[in-house]
Length: 400
Ligand SMILES: Cc1ncc(COP(=O)(O)O)c(C=O)c1O
Image 1 (cartoon, protein in one colour):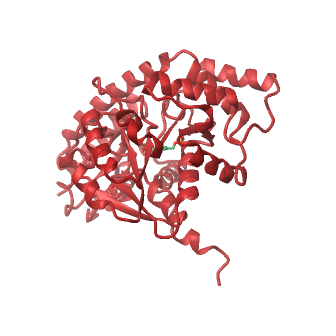
Image 2 (spheres, rainbow, N blue to C red):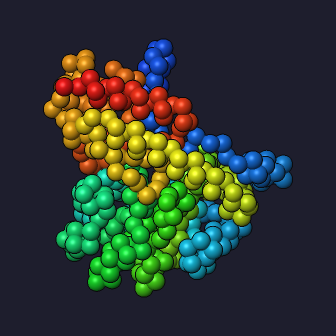
Image 3 (tube, protein in one colour):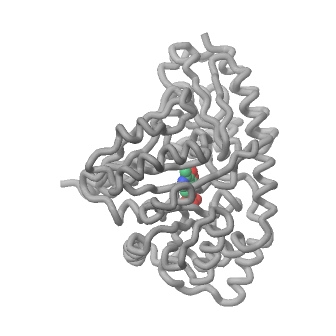
């Protein structure tokens, strides 16, 4: 009998964090490395949000708070849902956690029993399948390839539902593909779900505000109000307000689920950081200028990266609707050999060779459940992006 639990053996460390770590190691050895693997905005948290946090410290808000959020933050979250999503929630239907990640974790831990299935469209955010496994459930991966815009079709959803299905996880716009579901595409899915009253929906809306070309964001509970009593709508301040380090995420759902998640949180982390909660409240209730500014910057960078990648032989990069990632296909490079004689047998070999030979850190597609692709996070400065695209192009041109 080993010391570590069998539960832990079901999961692997986050491959995106691993790639970022490998890039940091090479940089420490003096190599010139451009990191395009980390999923966080490169901007600073807006000043008025930082000021609110300092004021919270000065006012002595440094003690435990209510387990799943201060009453005033919950009220600000209710107002946000009403204002931006047309969703009416009471504070008793709101939960606040240490990042959106904890909201997802709490929800899955609170609801999954051995053998319960969770439908996860691929490419997916790397943490979904591992969180499901940790909670004892079974991920049911449905591949959604580039030709269908990386979006789940109603037919594929219908085909994946079984008597054991408990949740569908929907992430729009998506990490890693940037694909978003417009109203019609979302409604096609909610229509299927109406026919399956036992299936719940976990809507991960963390990239809600990062949408381009006038794309109109929608969320399942808004598109189909009859589903609202089996939807957990998850969101957070990390990506919208450049607050990844503050660790505040939130969710809205029926009271029974919110209560179960609070019970779990009370025996794990207690409350999210008190000071961060005041900062998040300032983010949601204060000026919203940052959102438009960052969206414009990300759209410019997206266009730069898509055009640059499509000029690389062997790479085919579709135009994403949102988030700050692109997920190009490298089907045209598989089977070729790099300048340093590495056989590009799959997308992992490609990402490793690109890092070793050209000093550009990206994440390989297999980590997100759909190959042969790789993910670039373009949440970094324009000069870095131009340099990285130049190196990737040289790498591709030298493969044969
Ligand atoms: C799709 C998706 N959901 C949720 C999260 C969690 O974000 P946080 O825990 O910082 O709120 C991330 C972060 O990378 C993400 O990409």
